[in-house]
Length: 331
Image 1 (tube, one colour):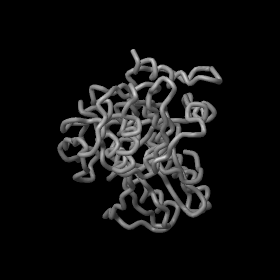
Image 2 (cartoon, helix red, strand yellow):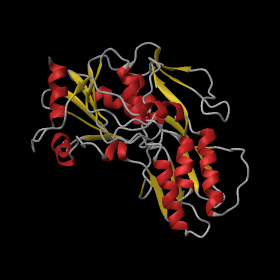
Image 3 (cartoon, rainbow, N blue to C red):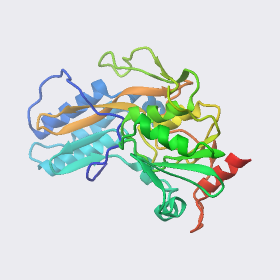
Image 4 (cartoon, one colour):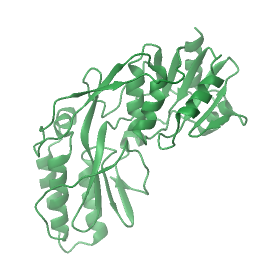
């Protein structure tokens, strides 16, 4: 698990009041506390055991021998981050005053399939800005919306203005590549502009006990149509491996709609609603606590495939993912 400054990718972060045996504020006590918090409240143990053989008890044995009460704070932080990296979860973070532990292999180990210079070419300099949205009409009368982060707020008025401006376009591209997530409410607000009847988009569960498989029944998640201006023409949503958390959920929701096509690369995933707790030394740990599924009750923790798989290409003047979407929309 690498350590870098904070980068927000969560849907939301909830504070958890977890009842647990109090541990001493020593390296071994903090190790025991962290392992116990995860053991009792992390939500993907069973799934990841089947996906790649994760054994949390074996992880305990593997890292326990690396902990000594004589070790320094930075050394303990490294061991604990290494242990958490076994979960392969971008929503799992360990935080203290001088460092931030996180697992980002879900995007770092794959092609980026995005270019800042090509983005500037397609947006130009005269694009419009509506809160977190940048948008314009491309020269083939295709609307283009760039939403870089669901951390950036949008309102109903913003969406009314954007869709009114693009209303005469033949189709619409929504580019969420490199969108690491943010507020799920922003994702739902945008997605509601493309649904025309109450639609089942997925399921959610909640932990009901400390066992690895103690969960509530799957609760259906519905998307309601917006009462404001809605889009009826074809839509392409552009994805890459850096689409995570709330952005991944947006892609999952949009994939359920008949007039929407996902184009680009497999998304990064991150389908666990995160919560957080503290260790005896005051370090904060965040972890996935509530699993979310697609409308077919399938896990999306490790991302979803697009409808049309395509990379950015090697051209310095054209983005092959955008060009594929443009061709799809005018066929």
